Length: 573
Image (cartoon, rainbow, N blue to C red):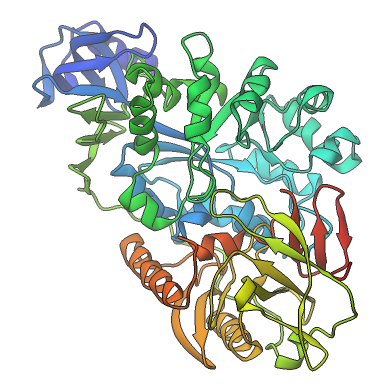
């Protein structure tokens, strides 16, 4: 669009392409509610005021208009559907822009995975910006499918303008120790004036000062009010997270006030399809914030302009002249529900339903259907001979992704350690999908199943195959079926598969619709509940057991990981 083309519409000398009448606009700058009309030219807002002519007219009859909602940080892969299907779902919830970190698919397929996310979403009615993954592999204590180096990123940045910056820098010890490759990576992005996202759970004091000195200016890992306030006070944009497992909003929203709210944004990070469909997306966070006592205008700012300004999205986040015509219409700011969603001046959703066809650009997409090269699992590989003494056991939690290290007596039969359902101690194994055989067997507590086994190819961060179960037979059955599918979620009992969901895109996402994926996951959850699980989402919990960058004890294909000490440890103590 040329500037001279929009000026006559802004001045009222030419009719608008679209005139939105009788709107109550939430002004994110003044904090006021304006009763006004909105004149739109092509994909931009030309002005607010007493405009009366439009080639198309929408009369809102006093409904509220807010800016299109922005998710400040998420992994599309966690929705378990492809990025276009994800767009179809979140657009109905008022999300028109997302800052995606394709960290998961990059760990599986490298730049090819990032290219898939960008190419497939080219031209769809959702602004999908990308942060280049900074940690591929995330650690040297797991086998990843790829490695992204600084030299790989230089040309990629020039080719893809939708890359806004560097994704969450999880290796904070590497920052503090001035690791050469990592610091060079950060220098590349900061000298191009691009944003650098943080990932610094529990980092405080002088270590936090040093971390921020590396031009890392955002963080989504705060779990306590004190942590969030310290990070804001040191100049970070704190992204309040409300995902499927990590739900920090109740704890953090209480520190948001009129003096500091501009330095808080909303993000979902990792959210499963059922939660997107049932709860919502960023709209859900607005409702929760308002219910917690936050002024609705402040909540909308956190869902729009705050994030747009932090990431330098100059034409997004506000209903104002020159801004993109990304709008959400709602009847109530307190009980926020997207009645109508307008993207680039085009109505894309009404009453929670998509009213336009959305298709991705499928020409010349990278093939991500086959990412497993490992050999089928054999039962004898799971046997763990007792060496005497106690063992380290990973304890998982329902509340968040943190784990605890437990030192417990093992249950031993015929000289081998076995699962002990009476104490909820189960055998767990991680098998590298990228090599013929690299695997670790350990033990976990907290899943609660009494029979059977479950396996998944979704395992943060390298996404190796993980299986947990009561018997070796069921573990082998579930794991091998995941391999046969080329990725997926499988539940087995008595040596038979009793439930499965194929994940045919890089072993992370399904090409099915989100509603179908959500229904299948619900069926799988019901099956595992019948097996005795005490977790509301055992598959999400299992997917984080490998996460070797968040305390305390994890398991990867290379061994048990003491995250706090940053080293591999033995099973036996």
